[in-house]
Image 1 (cartoon, rainbow, N blue to C red):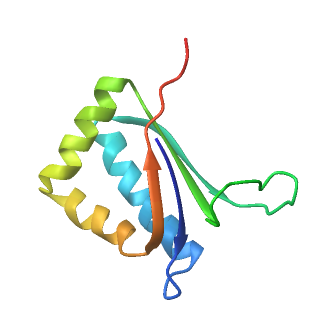
Image 2: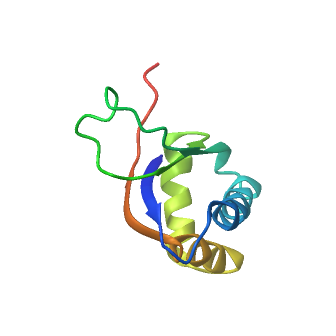
Length: 105
């Protein structure tokens, strides 16, 4: 899954990364996620054609397509710590877009 977004003016990258890591660690402990990565955009005239003006990209790698779908159900159930962790991440975002991709074998 990839997500691209900007942080709200009240948020900073260090605070976001702490919240994002805690969120992903919960998903990893639940058995859905293998790893994740946070990217900050490196603006460049040649590479930026047609991409929205979004500064942060996250990458979350699931164990499988089934794990990605089960993870979504886990998050949507909003029970236990994941509810607060998800809210803690989302509260810092603006102009967000997320998309699920599958690796080509």
